Image (cartoon, rainbow, N blue to C red):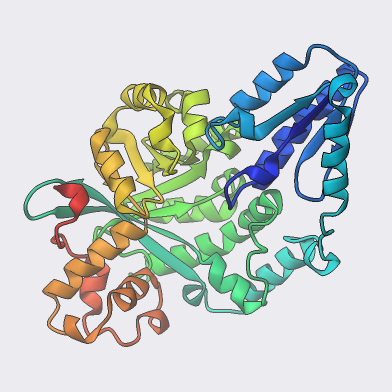
Length: 408
């Protein structure tokens, strides 16, 4: 038998690295159990040759794994019997042999250890506020005025700025494991800078001191357990600071004992625990609530509306008050969230709505473009806010915005 998994037919930007890893793992397992061999083809397809008449279950498994990204299994999988369909397989093999091989210059390892070291060097030599960005999450209240209540402002390193400094666009996230390693090395630098800002009543930690939306930080588990975090947490306790710490679900699942220790430390410090980067796949396959987070950030995906009742049931279990729809970049995202009882949002669509409200309330708003207002609000230092005549409004965001169709 020959089974072809047509990853090349997935809609861009797929196939992503996790698609390839999962597909290869499943097909390698089938090859080992059924005396077969897997071939990775230049166009991203995977071909399995094996001695078996039990091909149906394997095809069904692959179809289930990829159904959210490619609902039509007929377009995803081709199954041939060599006795009957040898000519068809031969034509397919000849077509793949004619596929252009990737340019070696474009297939060099990305996200290498050298790239990560270069990024860390940039951070060591730069002013930290020039390398960071922030984004505001809001509670959206439907109605005529379209009122937004800022909930928190997430401060992170700007990957785009870091990559631009070393001319390595797209490389930081190319290897997610190396990127998490970089993040763990950068946690200490961020925490020390924020502690100094907290003691000096600086602008980075204004939200922690109650002057604007609450401050949220992205940290690794090792960062939470580090000495710099202990010093930062002590500073927070001393002034009753409002701070949330966001930890990715995948990291919590990879090391449950470390996660529980970090959770205990956050609780003792009086800080909010946020479970970050929860995909719609994870929402249906896991029960994030058992990790006892204060908030859960569900990543928006165009495939969420296709997930059906399973997502609705998962959201009901979580409780709408604990869910933030993250990466809400479009009106569709807001409409879907509101239809499912979600009222907390973060993403570029929210950024644009906040900017529209600021421009309407600002005496100098007519001198700025919407994009300029969005970019200045995301900056954490004076250089990124240059040109704004009302920085105080950037700091607090505007509760009134132009009415969005999603809020009708």
